[in-house]
Structure formats: C-alpha cells, structure tokens
Image (cartoon, rainbow, N blue to C red; front, side, top):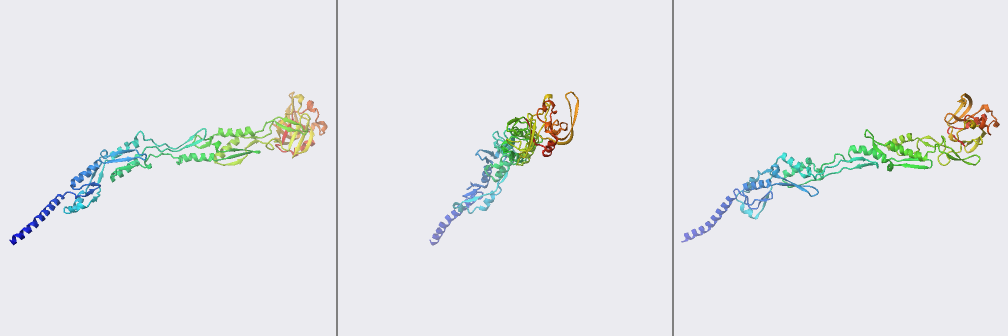
Length: 466
C-alpha cells in the first residue's frame, strides 16, 4: 500500500512535468526557423515569422520602394524602385535567428528586441540617370532655365542686369543626392539651392567686371570747369549716357556726346567775334564790332582732352583749352591795357595798366578810294621790325613801303606802323587826311610815337577800332 502511494505521487509529479517539457520542446522546435515574439528588424515586426518570410517581406518592402524628391517650394516628384530595377538582399537575417537560438523563446514574451541589418542595394544606374533626367524639375516645361547677367547700353545710361536663377534643377547635381538616398534606403530627398542650374555669367564674372569697372570709373569722374567767376560741373549724371563700346569692345565715351558738351560750353562762354560795349576816352559808350578778340574754346582739342580724362577716371578742376583768349573773363574783357583807335577823330590812345601811356594823331585807310580801316575788336597778332609792306594799287601798279615798327591786328594785311613818308610831326596826321590821302587800310603813326608804343605793347594786347 505504501509503495503504491509513492508511485502515485511520483506519477502525479512526473506527468505534468513531462507534459511541460514536451510542450516547451514542441514550442522550441516551432522556433527552429522562426523569430521570437517581439522581434523587429529594420522597423518591421517579424514576431513568429520564419526567416524566409522575413527575407521576402524585407525584399518586397524594398521592391515597393518610392523615393520622393521635394523642392524648396513644396512641389515634389517620386522615383519608383521598379523604374530603376531597384533590388535588395539581406544576408544577415538568418544570423539574427541563429543568435536567438530555439530555447529562449519564453523570455521573449516579456521583452522586445530591435535589430537593424544592412541590405545590399542594387539598381540600374543607366535607368536612374534617365529617370532623373526626365523629372519635371529637370526637363519639364515649368523648369525655367537661369538667365545670365549682362550689361545694357541705353540712351539713358549703362544698366547692369543681374543674373536670374530659374527653377531648373541640374541633373548632374541632383543625381548624387538621389544615389545616396537610394543606397541608404531613405524615402525623401530635399533639393537644396545648390542643385539648381546656375547662370554661367554673374555680376561678379570677369567678363562683366571688365565692362563695369571702366563704366564705374567714368561715372565716378567729376570735371569742374572754371570759366571766369562761373563753374560748370560735369559728373556721372550727365556722362552716364555717353558711355559706349568701341569696335574692339573697349569701354569709351561717345565722341559726338563729348563734342556736343564742349560745344555747349563754347556757345555759352565764347566771346570771340562778338561786338562789345566800350567806353571811349571821351566818355561816350560805343558798340565796337566783332573781330578776332575774345575767348574761344578749342572744341576739338578740349573734347579730346575731356574724353581721355573721363576714360582715365581723372577728376579735376580745370579751364578748357582755348584757341583765343582775352585779358579777362566777364563784362570787361578788354582789361586796363589796350589800344583805342577812333576813325572819326583820327586819333589813337594807348593805355597801359589803366594809365594813358601815349596818344597820337593817325591816318587810317583811304575811305575815298575804298581802303577803309576795318572797325572791330582786335588784338595784336605780331610785333615785327624793319619790314617792307607790299601791295597793289587800284590802277594795278604795285607799291613797296618800308616800315620800322609793325603791330599786326588782322591777318597779314592790317596793322599799326610808322609812316616815314608822312614825316614825324603830328600835323602830318589826323584831321581829314584819310578821306583823300589815306592808307591802304593800315593805321599810319608818327615814327617817334610808334616806336614808344611798339616797345611797350605785347602780343595779344586788345585793339579797339570804332
């Protein structure tokens, strides 16, 4: 009885234990090729899945792979894995199972294990390049290309038109980003600004700077003309419209514009050839006709000089180049040193530094024979001694008249000189002699006075004949 009881007890204990062991073994055998509960691989739950199922699932996941290309403005496009023969293999899936074994499955019900394994990615590079090239952001109708910077020459001035970045993506720059994403298994790629097709010419390009630097030099140059008490300021606000390119592409200024500007100065300030008001020795105010006296800007020479200053970027204050000058600028251009000749009075005065230096009777051109002395505002052109005046009479005969002192004032035909054939006495000059026995147009002067005046007069001294 006692033995039977012990056997029953042992049987009671062994049978459940055997059942437990048998169940554990059966379950363990179940996990021979299956992953434990709570097994996650690459973000996918493979609890109780076989190794083959896991491999197929991972491969299927990769085969349905889609890579989204996102532009900065939010627009996006996708590349499907199937379009590029995208494939993946996972050599380490079985290794995870081997590491788990088959006997520790019971502990997995209270634990979660995450695994990450690398896949071997493959795709057709040729197809990928074709797909990238066909993306709308690369070659679509809405992919606007960039615009190069350029310099525009207009009547108003020179405009630098900056480059414009379009919306066209550079396939050669996008492709490496896509390849990196594919190989990493990423599902999104964001296009950055560096991927867009860049303009080939920018405002900082050498070819643009080669144009704009001389343009800026010209526009930054200021020429201030001082003409008497007046000033004329020429700066970029005016010269900007003069800038152009010559036949060789060099930056220069339009010669017509430069000449027109200098001509405008001449039109405003030239007095050469103008008649002028003059107060005579007797106190009367007379209008003296124009002649060769006065200011005259040398338009051609000054235009050449101005153009070079602008091109060189040389700002300065200057007087224009003159081809004729007067004693001073302003209302009284005659100054304090001048020769005054009255045809009616047949008298000449020479003032030096404001004081009367000499005066004398004279004989001017024979008005009765048509040899009138020209009235006008002149200046002494030359000072000569011991010359012979030659000419032709009305009857065709010639004459030769030697003189000791000559002050030419108009061309080579008219001057002030001594006249030995008339003597040196004041009585031999003045009065009405010029009306019947006048000169051939010159101003005949007594020798002694002529000598004194000659020695005190300089070239360019004004000569006023009225």
